Length: 98
Image 1 (cartoon, rainbow, N blue to C red):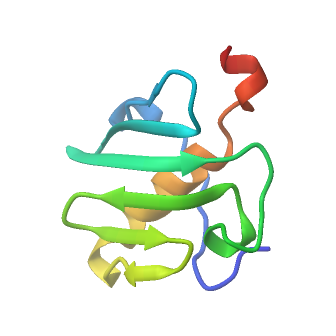
Image 2: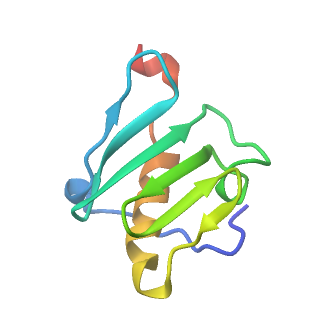
């Protein structure tokens, strides 16, 4: 289910850093020079972005999602947003991170 945001395949992941926060569903990092934090689950849900695994997402100066949009990404940030969502949705499940 893609919803209103188009996902892109990210072949250049070097602009995204990713650090799981120990013993939690939270991850943090940087995307295109912007800090982000996300709450990422193993399975998608109705609370996730477009029914996906990301239930909370904050990207500095770009967007804020907390089981619904508080601040949606503007058109000029869509590529960065799509790249990050695609990257996070394809991360290993937590059982692989333990």
